[in-house]
Image (tube, rainbow, N blue to C red; front, side, top):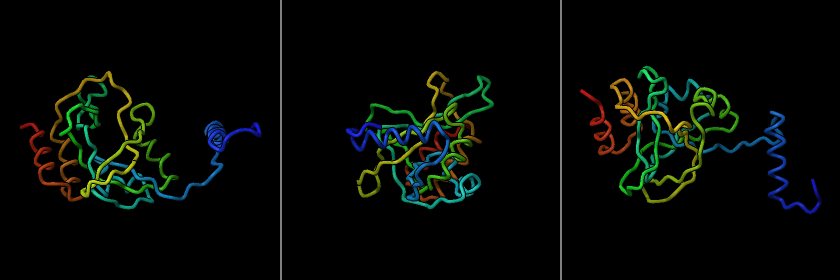
Length: 180
């Protein structure tokens, strides 16, 4: 590293070395806020995959909507994701889980990052109108067809939304997505 490097350049180089080596050079101990909107709303599901997680506040992701995609072309492997929209009223409600950084590799493995999902940084808004930066899992492939969800896709999300105390209007919206 050159002596004239800025602090940001040094940090970037160290992070790249860490990534390339697969070793952790610096332990991060502060929990990372993760916005969840799907089956991870359910405490029992996230606790199966992540041991160090703390519940956080209810928030929404503005200018996004919840959609479902068909991963295998036969409708047998369906997942929920969020897509950005240009409609200001669109929003996806969820909660923030405080996930410890050492838990992300296991969670990303379960979420099949980077093949299926990637983590992005987004701004969510809490009930008081305050913005918070969070990580969120978003489907990596955009070429997959959007599909109508089945009841077994939505019922776990509705249960999680109800258990986490998400707004009744949003829960009703989710109920309306459930096909007869």
